[in-house]
Image (cartoon, rainbow, N blue to C red; front, side, top):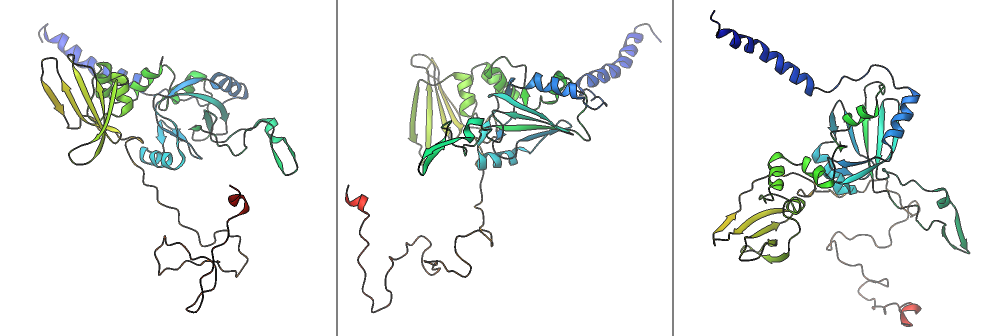
Length: 346
């Protein structure tokens, strides 16, 4: 074997080991086997409560939040979109949120953000003061006011292991960004690499949504709303003034459908082919099916009592019911009821 072949052979033998070390570095750290102690629970709760972080995903309001188990986030994007359509949006990628409460259970840790799913009342909201039949809570805030937050559940197989605050942060990294310096940096990290590069270079791509365009170009100086040749509504954002370069960013719905650039030299560039495909709650319309009325739905009628105005299936569904009075071929129409006294006094 010649002397020149030895370095090549050594390199060939070392490459698999290098890749193996690289894979080990990317692999998640192994969790401790010991069960979390009471003292560690108090330290973790104190360390993470009231911390401000940036969201990496969409958070729905309502009874269900997100769950992380073995690095997998559930529910999926389609279910999250449906939950947002039904209950509302608590946070979107790049939004700053607050971990308002941390609850450690037997085999999970629950992190409430922005107040959580339930509205926690103050002690003084349980006291009501009034005169006669009129009264209200002392705090002036109605008890039925729903919270606008959400929650993340960090689930484990058997029990919560002995974790430090930094280890818990690493496990929450799929949904929270603890290292971002500002909202713009946190938002860009949630986007595809192609979109990140475009925002960095202040470029607009067909398929971007409004937030992406604002992060890339800032807020437009002019906005125009009109209809195109097909009669479809659009909104156009205009950046720049002649003789400088002017960009016309046209939105149809929530995303950019057309980009027209007038260069300084008079060249006209038009792009309509989609350059980025985004699937978010802002660009998808979740179809919410109307809930069917159950057979045993609660009612105020007594057993056996019929409706005063039963629905007539022979008429149109939106046809108003006739005024009360005698019916039949020989019946004479009755005069309409007089208006209430408070209407006549107006």
